[in-house]
Image (cartoon, rainbow, N blue to C red; front, side):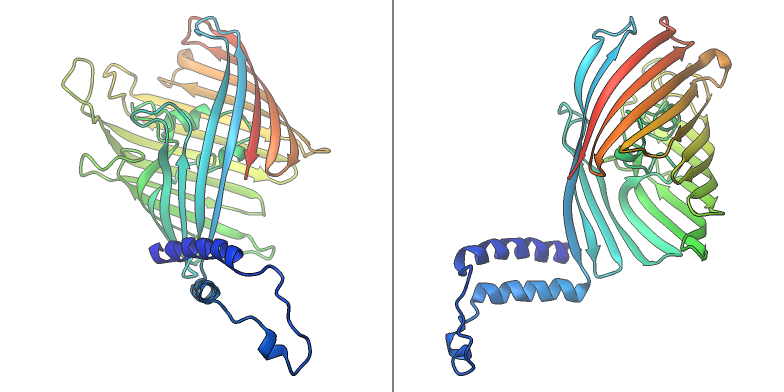
Length: 384
């Protein structure tokens, strides 16, 4: 892959030099006797460009650059906030991806917004290579999304709301309840996945995925000689429908443990989940996640927790789409710890790469001094 990237960058440089050194409209004599004599000779730069093009084509390689920006304004009447309204750059990401030697897909993605600091600011979020020769057996190595749940692997532009669900953020490694640093649902590891039994309409009936991960999140190495095992299995009876389950047997080590009272050196991270969705003109998705494991920053924290959500979307109409979600999380798996958010979002799509969204949330949090509050938000999504 390194050779392929080098060839691609050389190709870009040669194109620029070629534009400066070659005439834009060479004059060629169309008469048979003078064609060969009057045609300009191929320059060394043009020869090099041609060689790079042929080299890329011969390896079945390509490269693409892109990115996206999500800007946000929100207002909340929650009394415990220091500020009730804020403008925010929710995400700014840049990526390069493509294929090398026909069978290998690669991706490098950077997050470039946020205040600089440990696990903040500019940082790598994705960096992996996947061998994709067979649909039934693909191997991915590097840093990427954990193979747990339907929502977690989704691009933020496709989730449908201003944030992922609480089940995903609390129990799949965004702001994980065990005390792990913010990881956007990612880790470093090795994953095998594949799809079996092609159907008449082209989709495949059975999907599996299983991976081994460090368990310490993005940009962190293994700390305990224990690898997290995460896997999932689902069936797709009809195109657009998936019904499946997931499991996670893991451990998180407190990298900042100093023996202070009420902290833990490590904790188990044992989880399972069930998921179902249908994605067509009408859309619906629901997931439930159960978790066992304490917080390394609070030894007295509850051992068990769970979360779930159900969301649906109406068909698009003249560029508009209306979506709703019921989002719940219980920090100690009791109804007394329930935090539920009722969300309604209206999105207008200028095209698939530019859209704007207005969202209203009503939150009922039994663990907060301000149990009921409202939030209004507007987000602009731009992909390039």
